Image 1 (tube, one colour):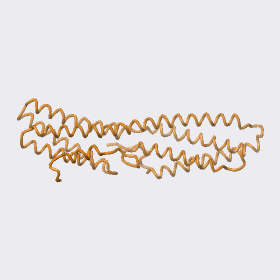
Image 2 (tube, helix red, strand yellow; image 1 turned 180 degrees about the vertical axis):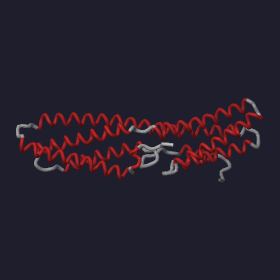
Image 3 (cartoon, rainbow, N blue to C red; image 1 turned 30 degrees about the vertical axis):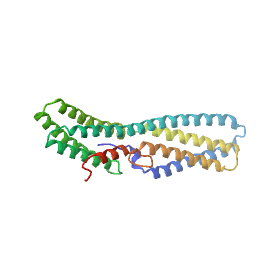
Length: 261
């Protein structure tokens, strides 16, 4: 089950360091080329160069806004799916009270285990294990639902099966939309390529207009590296500082009785 993008093999802090070095290298290279060009082509003016650099920076800003919008949309989707799944499991748990014994107790126990494993799944490195366990529990829950439907084919049973089916559907939706829908690698490549060219242009323009490097260039390098790091953090559901709150699932688990487990 593929849940990772190629960049996921690089930790967020390592990605920040690599981005910082690449952008700093671009600025430094551009500055040296600009100084070399200024000594050999004094007729070259900084005004048209500045306009070109501004155009590239504008394109970079557009790409950043587009990518941030994509990552933010996926983050919002993951947050909504947590609430939707918690509501669906809660509904199935309540409707299971209308199912006759012994299936009632078994189904409710399985649903409590299901919530527990969903909470474990958000921990780093536990997603694959949690997904496998979730699918196993779904199979056991569905087997219990089939038994109930065979023994008690009533409208109440149909309502329970409908709610259980929604739980299973939301699991698939949460995996697909929450974990697999990520920023494509081609967009990352275009973003880094444009950022490199833009910083190269900034350094080149600085080399044409100044004999010494400005500390503002270092600030620019750190800022762009931080923005790209933040974008990567937003795109990674299992890593980083920006994570979807699981409070809806936690509250649901507390509401399930018996509480001792």
